Amino acid sequence: MNSQNKHNSKKVILLLAIIVATLSPLPISVLAGEVAPHWQYGGAENPTQWGNLSKDFALCESGRDQSPINIKNAVESTPATISFDYKSSPLVVVNNGHTIQVNYAQGSSVTINGEKYALVQFHFHTPSEHQINGKAAAMELHLVHRNEAGKLAVVGVMLTKGKANSLIEEVWKNIPATGKTNTVSDLLINATSFLPKSKAYYSYEGSLTTPPCSEGVKWNVFVEPMTISEEQIEAFEKNYQVDARPIQPTNSRAVQLHH
Ligand SMILES: [Zn+2]
Image 1 (cartoon, rainbow, N blue to C red):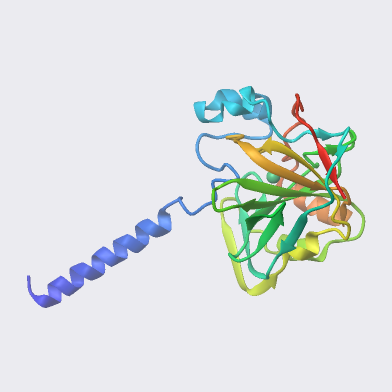
Image 2 (image 1 turned 90 degrees about the vertical axis):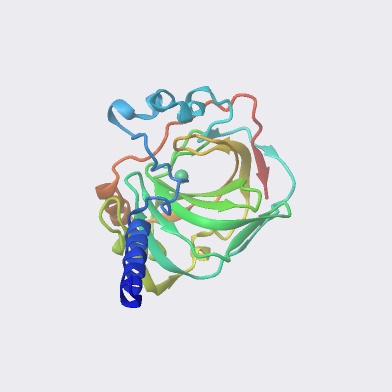
């Protein structure tokens, strides 16, 4: 093999590596559960069947600390010890077949009781997954965080019908086709604008609300809702009519209120 051929074969290997990397499904977030096997919010693979769809999803059926729950009888606890350090991030919108998700750039975090968790992504559910005293909201936003040990902390924001939300407007404008990701690198967003003025929140120990329904997720749901306009709700519902898991039994768990 002469040096020119060697050079060419290196080029071919590099090209193949790029093709494999591009086709690889690995970088897509596992958090939202878009790994095989299939699951859905309706039809034969609806939430009551999730635990039967795969051994990996067993906790969806057998778990005792599942989410979402109806938040009631909350016990007054320590004052709010939650603080946000959200930086801006390029807008990366993923339409993953279950929800609209925005992947967040590294470097933003929430600190809860002195424990720091990095913001990974946020996504939306309609109607809300949690209820507060038996009442659901039009939608619910989940800001998903993870600490260095891999523990998840999700901050939930109830979205009630009212004034339009300008950040949601930007996200909705950039929704790609199902299964696709839209990277808008020249548009910076900041999730701080999703946070209500009052930092009072409910906390409890729960799970992912999508398969594999893993437990050990620290849930923090703001008492004060944010608003979303009717048009914005309808625009989301054109993509996902319903993407909310039904309420799960609270069992012996305590819900705490911090304010
Ligand atoms: Zn969620």
